[in-house]
Length: 553
Image (cartoon, rainbow, N blue to C red; front, side, top):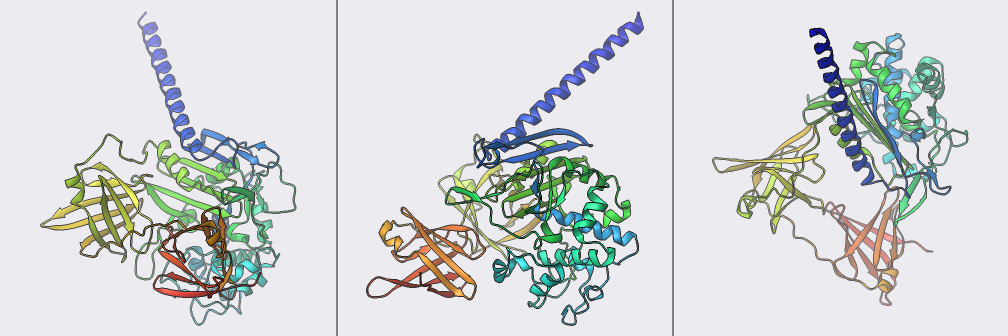
């Protein structure tokens, strides 16, 4: 009888535990649904998201369209170009060859490219992996736009950027760099005797049964390929064409969320390399001065509310991606988008926060602080990195604006001296001791301390209206220097500017011939002859003036 009672109690406990787990899973699912639906609509470009814990899938859904022209719905099996998440595969390939004794992380790149002009500097494989080489990143070169459609062999393309001036001495700075990972792809080829595409396909994809992963191709028929898009002036168009020979080992891999879970599981389980070897990829390396860079080999190192994360995103014409792994919870989040106009980065981080039950905190609308308390923190703060941030008060709302930026951001109180931005990633913590005010500005793992100064905040510019027929006169292409052009277009009562290789931004009038941008602190002034014909413009930015001459139609 006693045993029967114990069995019934055990069954009841198991049932309660099961019901609690189901409710918890449903709650997480609804929270993630809400995050994704806020940005992705059924009749627009789409998204696929997967969340797994200890290898078990907790969430796997798709929203929006995989193909707008054919009206095809997105599904979780869709294949995307993952962009710079490719760097993980390149870094692990290097570590595989390291274990085989075929290379050293301290090898100079001239061992593999003898004629590379290092200008007497030692540039190692380690420098390439950590974005600390100082080599010019080819995607930041203005002339890159001239070759994006060309198929170019790896060594030939290295010739394209190798003679560019170095940005800094090796190891002196961290600057995200696609050239470094391109060179790593060539080193993999030299050492392994296999092409980079064949290496990742044979030694990684096949071994891990990643059957929906590929080295990118524009001609190959790829089952479940999601079409890539971009948006201009509120309208979708097909993504800009780029030869997959150019992203190469820095960004040419294609995959889906299921295969990416296989990839992360293999990394966590030390399938491809030993634990002590893969740990090299997750070490927070330092610059020559000892400052940490929050980057390992192919992965960024960050945190979510105190828990370490290993993560990386990707962007390539038509696609954006973000993957986040929380080692202590064994939680993996991967999100893909098929439009360059919709980044999944913040979404993936928010979803990861939900999955580990450490969501980002933003103030509730009911939480308020008296105006006199808010006014206490108003002023300018100079931070350790040299940045100055201005805290201003309008009504009962605090704003933060970085010097040199035209954008200000609302700050929401989470306590009397703690504030967060709307996304919850950026926070301020103010304090005052012996009349000295300080502010700790934190963006997840990055933290800077600012000290109050008497610097005045820039005055806000006032917008005026300019007639559409006047805006029409400013349309055209203005060349600021060879290969660098600003294209001016108008639509109804709005004016837009787009520089070579950059997105399009709206211009706002402060005078009939002078306009400013809100995304950065910059302005453009148009110059006309006596007849009112526009012949040139001047771009004012960062204390510099650049004149652009209008090109003939």
